[in-house]
Structure formats: structure tokens, C-alpha cells
Length: 160
Image (cartoon, rainbow, N blue to C red; front, top):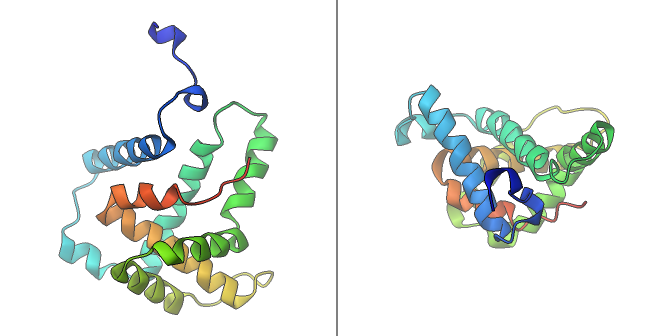
């Protein structure tokens, strides 16, 4: 099959976990080429709020890429993405992942929950705390263990 005849991502026979790992590795490689790598001491000093800020961006990019194939009208694509990145859905995702988390990851989740303050008035504060915890975990894993991040992202049920 030539390059022009290559199948779209959603039609390829590779397991989705491999696709997620490749996505994560490519993203990390591009960031590493633009910015100096953080040492373990430096990322340990990052606040949970900073990790959540990064995790929010990484998770939204993952969801956008997940829904980009097969191609959809932009308003459908937008609606699908927004449904997944809402605080309520992120809180559910955290509950899905909780049984699979390691002790260090549970500690990061706790730190994220404790750092969450305020939030939008439309969202229950407990839901907002859980969503912030989820984003903190994503940011932490992005910086420390991309393979583990890909493994956990595969456990999420992103609806079509």
C-alpha cells in the first residue's frame, strides 16, 4: 500500500493502546525538542494546580485527536469533545481509573483534590475537586511516565 493509499487511523488494525502510546511519545518528543527537560526535582516542585493546568491541555488534545478520525463536521466534533472535557465527565473518568491507580498516583490525586478551590458555580464543588484531581494526574503522568498515561487513557470509555 502506498503512502497515498494508507488507511485512516480508525481503520488501521493496530491496537488502540499502541496508538495512544505513539501519540503520547510524539507529543512528548515535540515538547522535549522545544523546551528543556525537567529534572525529577523540578517536576516534584510543580504545584498540583500547575499539573492540573498541563493535564487539562494534554487531556483535551487527546480527546480532540481521538474524535478526529473519522472526519466529522466541526460542530459535531466540537460537541463530542466538549462532552468529554466537562468537569462532570472528568470526575466519572477518575472514578473509572481509581481501582487501577498505584499508590503514588493516588497521592497525586489527593494533592490535586486538596488544591482545587472555587470553580464554576454550575458545578458541585466535589465534582470540581475530582475533575481537578483527574487533570493533575494526567499532567503528572505526562511529565513522568507517558507509557502509564497511555495505559490509563485506554481504560476510559470515550463515547462516539
